[in-house]
Length: 170
Image 1 (tube, one colour):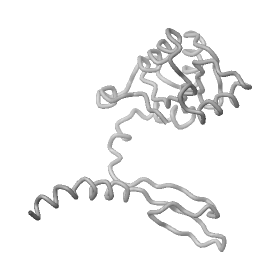
Image 2 (cartoon, rainbow, N blue to C red; image 1 turned 90 degrees about the vertical axis):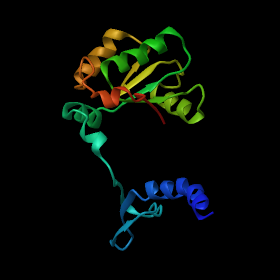
Image 3 (cartoon, rainbow, N blue to C red; image 1 turned 120 degrees about the vertical axis):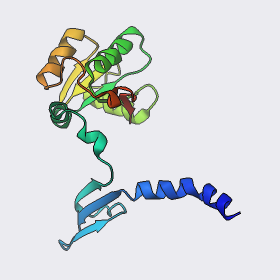
């Protein structure tokens, strides 16, 4: 009977252990530095999230790609717009570009973000590379912008990354 209870509780314990892999460093109003496993209060200064645990997956990514991601993160505003949207994803996937995907059609927050970026225009796809905004899919201009940001022309991701879904929904 105890084994059955242990098996039932195991997923909850594992989830708790995974959440404990995050730590926060923050400074209170008096200048005292705190380290906690819970989010800091809204009044905290210099709040930083520290991730603990296995970082092996991040270490395998080529350094040049890590730098491009750090300096020029890629976000794709996309929807079910047909060929231009499919071509946009295909280009990023074939080049091995890690990107976050925003769906203004399905998410009001994403729609508001897109409106701010494009002066109220909700036409997709829109590619954001760092602070550069490219409206509409144009293969040559997208490739040029990705080249300038330091992204590789073809995928240099290890196979462990390629087998995972390269598109992250926020």
